[in-house]
Length: 296
Image 1 (cartoon, helix red, strand yellow):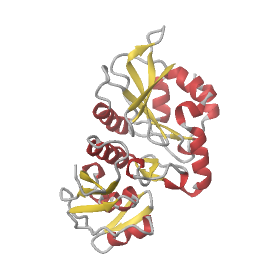
Image 2 (tube, rainbow, N blue to C red):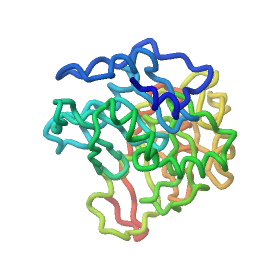
Image 3 (cartoon, rainbow, N blue to C red):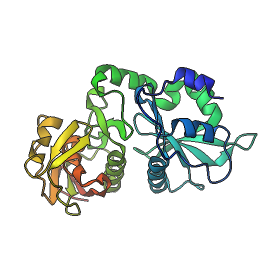
Image 4 (cartoon, one colour):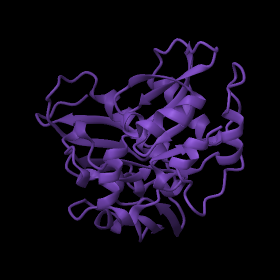
């Protein structure tokens, strides 16, 4: 079992399996699930194009999916994710002829779900071996990784996302794609899209406002980010913008309500300024403002 998968997908060298392998599917035994998770939970493959969840990351993903895909009649059970943050899950609503749950691909960025007619075992030993681009966007990963080889391999908490979100006018280009903590990406994407629900397509966005008042100022020290290991503390965070993007406006550490122009690398500039507190998902997008000055 999984000979073809392990022949085509090489584990990232030096990574150890997570100490908390993903628990078995709550609704019954899934063929091959326990074997693969016990051996490779939390590990990435082929530079990070695909990664299996451990229990802690899977629980976070399950919660995110329940909020983003509330229309699913049966909750999906996330077992892995792609380099660009799409979730791969066991679909409680569909089974194959042997009663095995089929796989569903969930895209948190736009709330779409793609049904894959393969069980957990077949997904790994056939689906992504024979056609990796269909489920993993592997061709785009190859193009991005060729341009940014110094960012590989992706670490356990990292995915690649648009630096300036497409909904805020960012370009659909490799140059606009960068590494980010996956919880930060999921949280901000959801919140920004929630704020945009009442706007019509094509509405220009001037700026985004984020409330940092719930976060306490960290003591001096350092924090690991997608930009490398950065110092944190009252005197250090003001320089973060220049590390992230040349035209980013520095973010004061003790700022409460912060306005971010829509041309700024939102994730690298603002989110990293608050990540030292240990829970980036606490960042709250309070509203986005149209170019006309109206707010939502």
